[in-house]
Structure formats: C-alpha cells, structure tokens
Length: 154
Image (cartoon, rainbow, N blue to C red; front, side, top):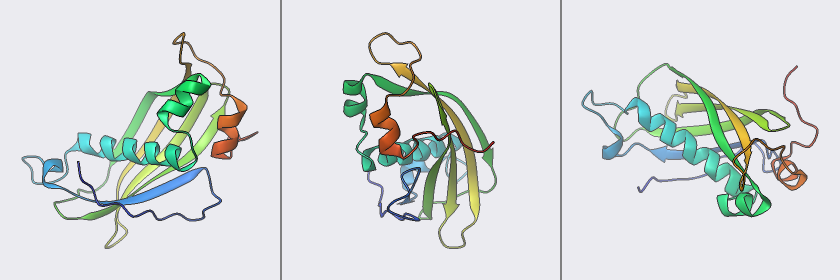
C-alpha cells in the first residue's frame, strides 16, 4: 500500500510518542464512501510499527531479544469520518508500561482542521518469543522507548 508519510513529532527526544501523516487512498474507502472502520486499526498498527522502528525496536530486533508485543484489547471510539484524499495525522503515545503489560493511546486526526476522528486505547502484553507466555520486558527495550521506571498516570 502506498501511503504518503511525513513524520511530525512533538520532540525528537520524546521516545514514548510517535506520529506520522497519511493520505486516505481509494482502497481505504467502503461502500459508505468513507474510511472503513477496520482501516483505522491498520492506520494505528502502522504508526505503532513506525514508532518501534524509530527507536530501533523492529520486529526482528524484538524477536532476537526474546519478546514480542501482542494486542490484548482495543477500545475504539469513532467520532467523525475521513474521506478519500483527506490527509490524516495518526499518533500513538505510551500511557503505561509495567512488567509484561503496556498501554497506548492512539488518535487519528484530519490535518486540515485538526478534527479528532478516532481514539483507540490499546492494551498490549509482551510475550516470550520462544514459549508464547507473558514475559517482563527486558531493559534494552524499556530504554529504547524511554520507559525505564515508567508506569503511567496514577
């Protein structure tokens, strides 16, 4: 899929946050002539993968370290629709990170008017790559994401 991307970050030092922009493509549109609800999850997955890559934690690196993240739950709220050609900013923010659990708050906004289209809170579980069981996240991964000692809001 060829999405136009240009990265827009609040701060290059903020390793807990990532955002990028995409343009809605014809294949993203459903019979109601707006972005299909399932496509927003793909947008969110792509920003999370881009975030991990930006901090050096691609899937092969994570697997070599011995843990991989898997989604436990998505809680999605749809506010407005995007249509063909809309430029969107998709962002992700780590909101909690402790033991073998992590949470992210994700948003999709229309760039032209900064309208919030979708919010998605995602809970992740870190899994031992060899055994398939929950496993605390090793320190190198915590350091890469800037979450050493981070538990999120109290």
